[in-house]
Amino acid sequence: MKSSLFIGACLLVATGSSAQNLLGLSTSRYGGTNRLYMNPALVADSPSRLYLNVGVVNAHVNNNYVRYQAPFSLVRLLSGNVPAQYKNGDGSLNFSIDYTRETLDGKPKNGTIWGEVRGPAILIRSGSGSGLAITTRFRAIGEVIGASESLLSAVRAGLNDNTLYSIPSNNNQFSVNTNTYSELGLTYGGTVWEGDGQRLLLGATAKVLLGYNAQQLINRGLDYRIVADPVIPNSAYLEVDKLDATLNYTTFLQNRTLGPRTLFSPSAPGRGFGVDLGLTYISQYDADSPALRLGVALTDLGGITYKGEQYTYTDIGQQPIRFTGAEFNNVSGSEEILRIIQQKLDQGRSPNQGSFSAGLPTSLNLSVDYQLPDGVAIGVTYLKDVRSAQAMAVHQPTLLAVTPRYDTRWVSVAVPVAYLNGGFTAGASLRVGPAWLGTDNFLGLIGNTSNGIQPRGLDVYGGIAFGLGRADEEQR
Image (cartoon, rainbow, N blue to C red):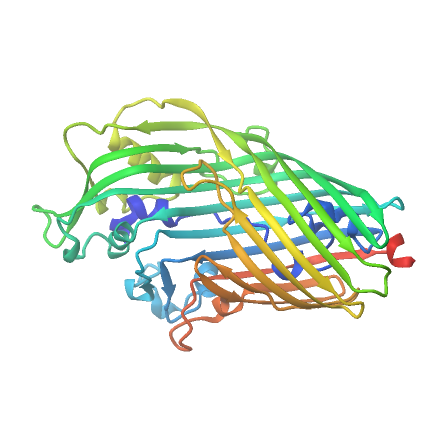
């Protein structure tokens, strides 16, 4: 597998990606500040006078290229708790190519891995039908968008599949983006129209962003072929004939851990600003009547400007450029991989620029929710990625979800079913008092060869968050 690192690590490595899903939590009436990431207007619809988010953690992986079929679960793989019989003598993982199965349907391939920590947050409802919230969040995102099956097959085979030798592949286009950053948000929303059991809420969130790490490879055209190495038996190299691309990266996190000293460092290379905007229509005659909520929002408008290196390639010269697996055998970290690629493409070249922009995962969010007075409810959520495939930005994967739930002040149960990346996922979440635990992809947590489940990703979240007191609307 090391022989495929020069592209494989760029496509598949990620520092973990944030998104704003957590469907069981974010669709709950008692989700408090966690609802605001879907639609900031909901700050004026909290049933609690005061809502405190102590902390919520989420991890997510999804793709439409390979299904996982190793003898151990994805949870064990990502946590590093793989049984000893699947490791090498030095303790490293012996991950066989047979542990994944390709999905070859001719469509561009996408993959996302994210991690998110929603830190301390507070929401306060006022008696005038408005609300105010202060939120904190750490997000880390890594994605590949629009990669071709032929390129990924070459990566997966580790350049050693002789059936791929000398077959040219032209005009491959894909984008790779990673972004690791934190945010401090201020949300305000209120009732802009009210009458006869109906209300229209308007809300907005302004976010200050601090960026720690970003890497981008925006490939607008790549021609390559895999050639048998005439010098080294049973080996091959990848020969690049044409490349039209932009390569950006930072090095701040190299040899640093993400502790408090790093998170609050004044030398962090990225600064930015973001905005969420939302409208919500509510039809509910009184607290004993069913409630219909219709929402529309644009979230994560904005981006981060990083101090880092930017290289633009439109002409690699007369001679093809060759990449061998040996050049990547001892690298550690995606920053080092990108530097090796840059040095190979144009040794000694200075960066075109000393800064670059990294856009946020802007999305259009639509929601319909119907809840009965006894807590039985159903919600439909549509999240649409509005960034172009070639954008220098991370993406919110497009998602359509239906979430039946039972939602009361002390207990919530939800079973979200979503269509994501060309496939269906099913999850479950449970809240008892202030404690939340859930997943948007339950089968991804347990799938392995022994039970025959072949997931394309996983998702899990949990945390502590709760409301205090009752808002005026619920006291009427």
